Length: 77
Image 1 (cartoon, rainbow, N blue to C red):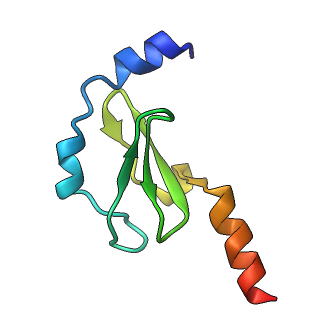
Image 2 (image 1 turned 90 degrees about the vertical axis):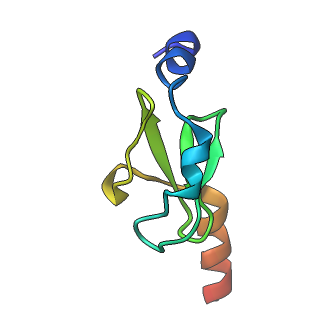
Image 3 (image 1 turned 45 degrees about the horizontal axis):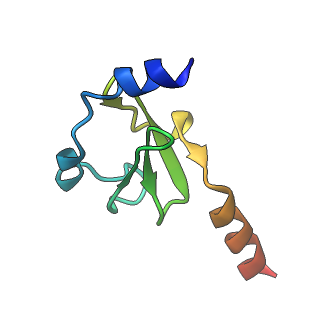
């Protein structure tokens, strides 16, 4: 999918929804990453995609945030 279509498709996402949305795994807050069209849960270390302006808040659809994984692995040693 090219950049123009991604920006156009997610133009309807309203960041004010972040007041109401929470991470389904931790029930913690989410942050909007407009560069990647994702909602980020720092506490869970997951990034949820937003497609056509609709947040996909399913763990099976989320991407693991690499820096979080590295920190978790380091803390277990």
